[in-house]
Length: 317
Image (spheres, rainbow, N blue to C red):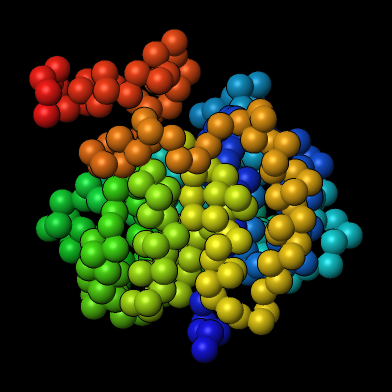
Protein backbone atom coordinates (compact mmCIF):
# COMPACT_ATOMS: atom_id res chain seq x y z
CA UNK A 1 0.00 0.00 0.00
CA UNK A 2 1.24 3.48 -0.82
CA UNK A 3 1.12 6.37 1.66
CA UNK A 4 -0.82 9.21 0.12
CA UNK A 5 0.64 11.85 2.48
CA UNK A 6 4.14 11.52 0.98
CA UNK A 7 5.17 14.54 -1.10
CA UNK A 8 8.01 14.37 -3.61
CA UNK A 9 10.18 17.41 -4.27
CA UNK A 10 12.56 17.44 -7.23
CA UNK A 11 15.61 19.67 -6.71
CA UNK A 12 17.47 18.81 -9.93
CA UNK A 13 17.97 22.39 -11.10
CA UNK A 14 18.80 23.78 -7.67
CA UNK A 15 21.25 21.08 -6.51
CA UNK A 16 22.58 20.43 -10.00
CA UNK A 17 23.25 24.14 -10.28
CA UNK A 18 25.95 23.78 -7.64
CA UNK A 19 28.02 22.08 -10.35
CA UNK A 20 27.67 24.72 -13.09
CA UNK A 21 27.08 27.92 -11.11
CA UNK A 22 23.33 27.69 -11.79
CA UNK A 23 23.79 28.27 -15.50
CA UNK A 24 21.34 25.80 -17.03
CA UNK A 25 19.82 27.14 -20.22
CA UNK A 26 16.16 28.05 -20.40
CA UNK A 27 15.24 25.20 -22.76
CA UNK A 28 16.70 22.58 -20.41
CA UNK A 29 14.92 23.97 -17.33
CA UNK A 30 11.62 24.10 -19.20
CA UNK A 31 12.09 20.49 -20.36
CA UNK A 32 12.63 19.43 -16.75
CA UNK A 33 9.53 21.29 -15.59
CA UNK A 34 7.42 19.79 -18.37
CA UNK A 35 8.55 16.24 -17.56
CA UNK A 36 8.03 16.69 -13.82
CA UNK A 37 4.57 18.11 -14.49
CA UNK A 38 3.66 15.13 -16.66
CA UNK A 39 5.03 12.80 -13.96
CA UNK A 40 2.85 14.68 -11.44
CA UNK A 41 5.71 15.47 -9.06
CA UNK A 42 4.51 17.62 -6.16
CA UNK A 43 7.25 20.29 -6.17
CA UNK A 44 10.08 21.44 -8.44
CA UNK A 45 12.84 23.45 -6.78
CA UNK A 46 14.03 25.69 -9.57
CA UNK A 47 17.01 27.31 -7.84
CA UNK A 48 18.10 29.76 -5.17
CA UNK A 49 16.59 33.11 -4.31
CA UNK A 50 19.90 34.76 -3.48
CA UNK A 51 20.36 38.50 -3.29
CA UNK A 52 22.02 40.24 -6.23
CA UNK A 53 23.48 42.61 -3.66
CA UNK A 54 25.66 39.73 -2.47
CA UNK A 55 26.28 37.76 -5.70
CA UNK A 56 27.06 38.97 -9.19
CA UNK A 57 24.79 37.93 -12.05
CA UNK A 58 27.91 38.12 -14.24
CA UNK A 59 29.49 35.27 -12.25
CA UNK A 60 26.37 33.12 -11.72
CA UNK A 61 23.54 31.95 -13.92
CA UNK A 62 19.95 33.04 -13.52
CA UNK A 63 18.89 30.11 -11.30
CA UNK A 64 21.07 31.53 -8.52
CA UNK A 65 18.52 34.35 -8.27
CA UNK A 66 15.24 32.95 -9.68
CA UNK A 67 13.57 36.14 -10.80
CA UNK A 68 9.81 35.71 -10.88
CA UNK A 69 9.58 36.79 -14.52
CA UNK A 70 12.01 34.08 -15.62
CA UNK A 71 10.08 31.45 -13.67
CA UNK A 72 6.85 32.57 -15.32
CA UNK A 73 8.45 32.03 -18.74
CA UNK A 74 9.52 28.51 -17.77
CA UNK A 75 6.05 27.42 -16.66
CA UNK A 76 4.05 29.38 -19.25
CA UNK A 77 1.67 27.24 -21.30
CA UNK A 78 2.47 23.96 -19.52
CA UNK A 79 -0.50 22.32 -17.81
CA UNK A 80 0.75 21.41 -14.36
CA UNK A 81 -0.08 20.75 -10.73
CA UNK A 82 3.63 20.81 -9.84
CA UNK A 83 4.37 23.66 -7.43
CA UNK A 84 7.50 25.79 -7.74
CA UNK A 85 9.94 25.93 -4.84
CA UNK A 86 13.05 28.03 -4.26
CA UNK A 87 15.76 27.77 -1.63
CA UNK A 88 17.32 30.55 0.41
CA UNK A 89 20.43 30.38 2.55
CA UNK A 90 20.72 32.17 5.86
CA UNK A 91 22.52 35.53 5.38
CA UNK A 92 22.26 35.31 1.57
CA UNK A 93 18.73 36.57 0.93
CA UNK A 94 16.99 39.91 1.27
CA UNK A 95 13.45 39.16 2.43
CA UNK A 96 12.27 42.50 1.07
CA UNK A 97 13.28 41.42 -2.44
CA UNK A 98 10.74 38.56 -2.31
CA UNK A 99 7.20 39.46 -3.30
CA UNK A 100 4.17 38.17 -1.39
CA UNK A 101 2.99 34.72 -2.45
CA UNK A 102 -0.10 36.06 -4.21
CA UNK A 103 2.14 38.06 -6.58
CA UNK A 104 4.66 35.26 -7.32
CA UNK A 105 4.74 31.98 -9.26
CA UNK A 106 6.63 30.46 -6.33
CA UNK A 107 4.64 28.38 -3.82
CA UNK A 108 7.32 27.22 -1.38
CA UNK A 109 10.45 28.79 0.12
CA UNK A 110 12.95 26.43 1.76
CA UNK A 111 15.37 27.94 4.28
CA UNK A 112 18.73 26.15 4.50
CA UNK A 113 20.94 26.52 7.56
CA UNK A 114 23.46 24.82 9.79
CA UNK A 115 22.23 23.99 13.27
CA UNK A 116 24.22 26.90 14.75
CA UNK A 117 22.09 29.32 12.70
CA UNK A 118 18.69 27.93 13.65
CA UNK A 119 17.54 31.26 15.12
CA UNK A 120 18.19 33.02 11.81
CA UNK A 121 16.45 30.23 9.90
CA UNK A 122 13.36 30.46 12.11
CA UNK A 123 13.25 34.22 11.58
CA UNK A 124 13.39 33.79 7.80
CA UNK A 125 10.88 30.94 7.70
CA UNK A 126 8.43 32.97 9.76
CA UNK A 127 8.84 36.00 7.50
CA UNK A 128 8.19 33.94 4.37
CA UNK A 129 5.24 32.21 6.01
CA UNK A 130 3.81 35.64 6.79
CA UNK A 131 4.15 36.45 3.09
CA UNK A 132 1.92 33.47 2.33
CA UNK A 133 4.47 30.84 1.27
CA UNK A 134 4.70 27.22 2.26
CA UNK A 135 7.99 27.03 4.14
CA UNK A 136 10.55 24.48 5.27
CA UNK A 137 13.69 24.61 7.38
CA UNK A 138 16.47 22.37 6.05
CA UNK A 139 19.19 21.56 8.60
CA UNK A 140 22.36 20.99 6.57
CA UNK A 141 25.32 18.77 7.51
CA UNK A 142 23.17 17.20 10.19
CA UNK A 143 25.64 14.33 10.55
CA UNK A 144 28.05 16.80 12.18
CA UNK A 145 25.53 18.60 14.37
CA UNK A 146 26.30 18.34 18.11
CA UNK A 147 23.50 16.35 19.76
CA UNK A 148 22.68 18.94 22.41
CA UNK A 149 22.47 21.73 19.82
CA UNK A 150 20.30 19.62 17.54
CA UNK A 151 17.92 18.76 20.37
CA UNK A 152 17.58 22.42 21.28
CA UNK A 153 17.05 23.33 17.62
CA UNK A 154 14.26 20.77 17.27
CA UNK A 155 12.53 22.21 20.35
CA UNK A 156 12.84 25.73 18.96
CA UNK A 157 11.40 24.64 15.63
CA UNK A 158 8.47 23.03 17.41
CA UNK A 159 7.75 26.04 19.61
CA UNK A 160 8.78 29.10 17.60
CA UNK A 161 8.68 28.32 13.88
CA UNK A 162 5.83 28.59 11.36
CA UNK A 163 7.50 26.28 8.83
CA UNK A 164 5.42 23.40 7.48
CA UNK A 165 8.32 20.94 7.21
CA UNK A 166 11.70 20.32 8.86
CA UNK A 167 14.24 18.54 6.66
CA UNK A 168 17.06 16.25 7.73
CA UNK A 169 19.85 17.05 5.24
CA UNK A 170 22.76 14.65 4.77
CA UNK A 171 25.04 17.19 3.10
CA UNK A 172 28.15 15.04 3.45
CA UNK A 173 26.56 11.77 2.37
CA UNK A 174 27.72 10.32 5.68
CA UNK A 175 24.53 8.87 7.17
CA UNK A 176 23.74 5.18 7.36
CA UNK A 177 20.28 3.67 7.77
CA UNK A 178 20.71 3.38 11.54
CA UNK A 179 21.57 7.07 11.97
CA UNK A 180 18.82 8.08 9.55
CA UNK A 181 16.32 6.15 11.67
CA UNK A 182 17.56 7.78 14.88
CA UNK A 183 17.40 11.29 13.41
CA UNK A 184 13.92 10.89 11.96
CA UNK A 185 12.60 9.39 15.21
CA UNK A 186 14.23 12.15 17.26
CA UNK A 187 12.74 14.84 15.04
CA UNK A 188 9.27 13.30 15.17
CA UNK A 189 9.45 12.81 18.95
CA UNK A 190 10.16 16.52 19.51
CA UNK A 191 8.54 18.30 16.56
CA UNK A 192 4.84 17.57 16.84
CA UNK A 193 3.35 20.25 14.58
CA UNK A 194 5.29 19.79 11.33
CA UNK A 195 6.10 17.16 8.75
CA UNK A 196 9.63 15.75 8.56
CA UNK A 197 11.58 15.51 5.31
CA UNK A 198 14.76 13.87 4.03
CA UNK A 199 17.38 15.19 1.60
CA UNK A 200 20.11 12.62 0.94
CA UNK A 201 23.43 12.75 -0.90
CA UNK A 202 24.91 9.68 -2.57
CA UNK A 203 28.59 9.71 -1.57
CA UNK A 204 28.40 6.17 -0.18
CA UNK A 205 25.68 4.89 -2.51
CA UNK A 206 23.19 5.21 0.36
CA UNK A 207 20.96 8.10 -0.71
CA UNK A 208 18.15 5.81 -1.86
CA UNK A 209 18.50 3.45 1.11
CA UNK A 210 18.45 6.34 3.57
CA UNK A 211 15.44 7.87 1.85
CA UNK A 212 13.57 4.56 2.15
CA UNK A 213 14.58 4.36 5.83
CA UNK A 214 13.22 7.87 6.43
CA UNK A 215 9.95 6.97 4.70
CA UNK A 216 9.62 3.81 6.81
CA UNK A 217 9.82 5.98 9.92
CA UNK A 218 7.16 8.37 8.64
CA UNK A 219 9.07 11.14 6.92
CA UNK A 220 6.48 12.44 4.46
CA UNK A 221 8.57 14.85 2.38
CA UNK A 222 11.31 13.34 0.22
CA UNK A 223 13.81 14.99 -2.13
CA UNK A 224 15.18 13.53 -5.32
CA UNK A 225 16.82 14.61 -8.55
CA UNK A 226 16.52 13.30 -12.08
CA UNK A 227 19.24 10.70 -12.70
CA UNK A 228 20.71 11.69 -9.32
CA UNK A 229 22.06 14.99 -10.68
CA UNK A 230 23.55 17.11 -7.90
CA UNK A 231 26.67 18.51 -6.34
CA UNK A 232 29.55 16.03 -6.13
CA UNK A 233 28.17 12.49 -5.72
CA UNK A 234 24.67 13.73 -6.44
CA UNK A 235 21.36 12.98 -4.77
CA UNK A 236 18.76 10.27 -4.43
CA UNK A 237 17.56 9.51 -7.98
CA UNK A 238 13.99 10.67 -8.50
CA UNK A 239 13.20 7.70 -10.73
CA UNK A 240 14.07 5.27 -7.91
CA UNK A 241 11.81 7.14 -5.48
CA UNK A 242 8.89 6.94 -7.91
CA UNK A 243 9.47 3.22 -8.38
CA UNK A 244 9.53 2.63 -4.63
CA UNK A 245 6.48 4.69 -3.68
CA UNK A 246 4.03 2.77 -5.88
CA UNK A 247 1.65 5.75 -5.78
CA UNK A 248 -0.51 5.57 -8.94
CA UNK A 249 -0.55 9.37 -9.01
CA UNK A 250 3.05 9.39 -10.24
CA UNK A 251 4.14 8.41 -13.75
CA UNK A 252 7.79 7.46 -14.16
CA UNK A 253 7.70 7.42 -17.97
CA UNK A 254 8.15 11.18 -18.60
CA UNK A 255 11.18 11.10 -16.28
CA UNK A 256 12.70 8.20 -18.22
CA UNK A 257 12.17 10.10 -21.48
CA UNK A 258 13.83 13.16 -19.96
CA UNK A 259 16.87 11.13 -18.91
CA UNK A 260 17.24 9.70 -22.41
CA UNK A 261 16.87 13.00 -24.21
CA UNK A 262 18.56 15.48 -21.86
CA UNK A 263 20.57 13.82 -19.10
CA UNK A 264 22.56 11.22 -21.02
CA UNK A 265 24.03 14.01 -23.22
CA UNK A 266 24.53 16.14 -20.09
CA UNK A 267 26.82 13.49 -18.60
CA UNK A 268 29.30 14.33 -21.36
CA UNK A 269 29.53 17.91 -20.05
CA UNK A 270 29.08 17.62 -16.28
CA UNK A 271 30.46 15.21 -13.69
CA UNK A 272 28.38 13.84 -10.83
CA UNK A 273 27.69 10.52 -9.18
CA UNK A 274 29.63 7.83 -7.34
CA UNK A 275 33.34 8.64 -7.63
CA UNK A 276 35.97 7.52 -5.11
CA UNK A 277 36.98 10.96 -3.73
CA UNK A 278 33.33 11.68 -2.93
CA UNK A 279 33.03 8.27 -1.29
CA UNK A 280 36.07 9.12 0.86
CA UNK A 281 34.59 12.40 2.08
CA UNK A 282 31.36 10.57 2.84
CA UNK A 283 33.17 7.87 4.83
CA UNK A 284 35.01 10.56 6.81
CA UNK A 285 31.93 12.79 7.17
CA UNK A 286 33.63 15.70 5.43
CA UNK A 287 32.14 18.29 3.11
CA UNK A 288 32.84 17.25 -0.51
CA UNK A 289 34.48 20.58 -1.44
CA UNK A 290 37.96 19.03 -1.04
CA UNK A 291 37.00 16.16 -3.34
CA UNK A 292 35.56 18.58 -5.87
CA UNK A 293 38.86 20.49 -5.84
CA UNK A 294 40.75 17.24 -6.35
CA UNK A 295 38.61 16.37 -9.37
CA UNK A 296 39.63 19.70 -10.92
CA UNK A 297 43.34 19.01 -10.39
CA UNK A 298 46.03 16.96 -12.12
CA UNK A 299 45.93 14.52 -9.18
CA UNK A 300 42.27 13.68 -9.68
CA UNK A 301 42.86 9.90 -9.53
CA UNK A 302 45.34 9.87 -6.61
CA UNK A 303 42.84 8.36 -4.20
CA UNK A 304 45.17 7.09 -1.47
CA UNK A 305 47.07 10.37 -1.28
CA UNK A 306 43.77 12.23 -0.99
CA UNK A 307 42.52 9.90 1.75
CA UNK A 308 45.73 10.25 3.75
CA UNK A 309 45.65 14.03 3.40
CA UNK A 310 42.24 14.04 5.07
CA UNK A 311 43.12 11.71 7.93
CA UNK A 312 46.42 13.54 8.52
CA UNK A 313 48.69 10.52 8.10
CA UNK A 314 50.91 9.08 5.43
CA UNK A 315 51.22 5.79 7.26
CA UNK A 316 49.64 2.56 6.18
CA UNK A 317 46.33 2.06 7.95
